[in-house]
Length: 286
Image (cartoon, rainbow, N blue to C red; front, side):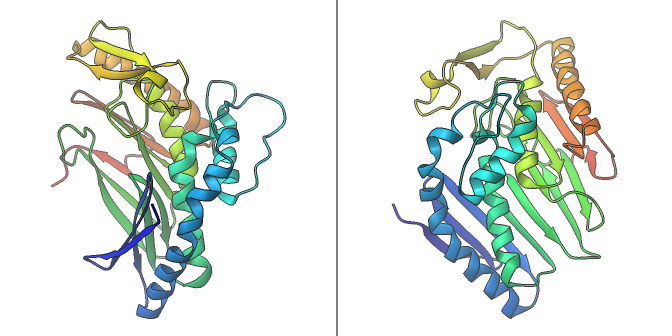
């Protein structure tokens, strides 16, 4: 199937090719926005073929030693974002959605001066904010209950240009049981990788949790036979708290290491925030 390009209501651009599904919003002068969208549409058709060409390497678990050699700019972003986690199981695919969003945004900014812009790749978002600009958005903490459970506020002075969400209910497989983990980081690929790792850490032993080997769930999974979560029944409040605290500890370490700025974790009605409340405010948005 060839790449699909369409203009959506609200002057947003929709780009879709195989599993890549982008919704792009840009603000600025009329001509600048038009140039940005034309550039995004021009670079987009090459993204999937370039990733497929390096897929064997990108699906290979990282290990200590030399950095894997890849050639495409998106592949290089994926390696850079996942390399800090090489001491545990991770493949560069953990950052693919965020890296794609980053790549398209960077291409847009090469040809146009914009006030604000976002490239949303299935919930993993690359951001641009010109000086003095502000972004407010909401977090849906549980895809099974589609409502806003928290709000995010980012201004141009914040060191945040990427937002990513992971959890067992999402489109990516998870080793943990979080309904969602949303991460704010310096860029989208870094946020994507970190959200994966924190969501994996939100876990507890409980008979209500069902797991299956990853490749049994999805035959093209890069996780092989590692068990991934496929169902989470009702958990006792103490077990929910324990699972979330495991994730909080992981997020706190990543924040101390400078890999994330903040994180929001949610599981069965309980939530935790790591980082400044200025950026993430828990509680249903008005």
